[in-house]
Image (cartoon, rainbow, N blue to C red; front, side, top):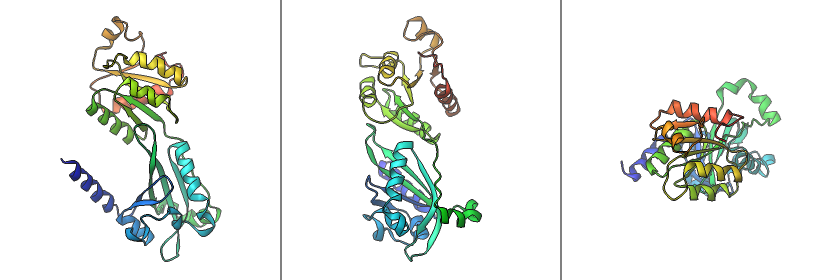
Amino acid sequence: MKESDRGRLFELFVDGLGDYAICLLDIDGKIVSWNAGASRLMGYTSQEVVGRNVSLLYAAEEAATKPAMGRKEAVAHGRYEQTGRRVRRDGTEIVAQTVLIPLHAVDNTLLGYGMLICEPTSLARTAPTLAASGKLITLPRAKRILVVDDNAQVLDAIGAQLTSLGYRVTAAPDAAAALDILTGPGDMDLLLTDVVMPGGMNGSQLAVEARRLRPGIKVLFTSGYFEVALVRDGTLDAGTQILAKPYRKHQLAQSVSEALSNESDPTR
């Protein structure tokens, strides 16, 4: 499938979500895209809102502070969720659930935000209370994983699987690129790296440098070579956690979860 066809298919999918307002924001909160669901829920056409700040969807007393605070929280925690008042084009107020997710480039540069707004039917009975109190609901920060693999197709596939599992993913094609990311700003919870890579530094050596730069980072190795062979030739220490290729999504999910929750980290 051509890239243009994939893009069009995605647009059709997003516009087909008639019960959900889905839009993209730039780093300052200006609306850059607006789906059909957003038009239905909020009453604005895309021509009326694209280029305007998302604060127009907030009550007057909240517009100056709440949108910016939400963006700040989203960056800090990987995701921000709030249930509160939103203002439609005709001036009527609704109680809606808003989810805001920061969108980063490969080098961890903030590009903008993805925002979803929906009417939380499960919260209908508590809507008056929430509207009056402006109660905020924030979720724990999603874990960020640095994935390193010299095979671009594998890198894309792992990234897509981890994203679908709720993780934030930063990808690097080699150890040098990974080190550039690790020396930059932003959190990083797990290094998921191939063991055998070109360029002079293998995954084990990268892990040593990663721990030096980020002492609290966890490490999970992946390789198409047999674990026993990697231990025998000294590339990895005995007892190191390694995910053997090929693997299924549930195996990836389990290994990543175990690596993140392992306090002793046997790869050290």
